Length: 143
Image (cartoon, rainbow, N blue to C red):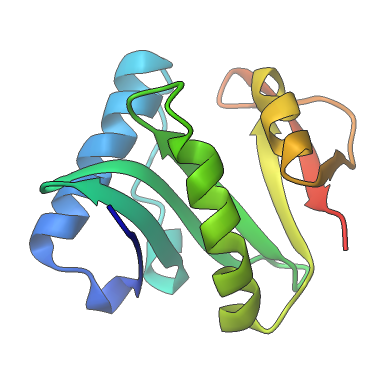
């Protein structure tokens, strides 16, 4: 299992299908988030994922935010508790920095996942806010 990093137009149809399948499994079925997942942000995103066979078992996307920072989103791993999320983030972050030419990386973390991101070097940079009915905070990667 290796980290795969591709821009949107480089994804195969199967990879895109498995990414959408994984995002639906976690965010819709597991967490009950009902939102427009197909938000067109994917077109300009760097897609970082780990597969087991054809199945995407860890995933995130990174893109340039409006303020010029790089934003990481849609972070997931399945199954949980196997260290896949940590591995994904640790391997992807240096490649994301290189791709975008920026050290300013931020994300909107579900509050229950704050400790996970803090262990990776992120710090809370906002008060709690609601995103799709789930409490979140903005977190920034320390330099």
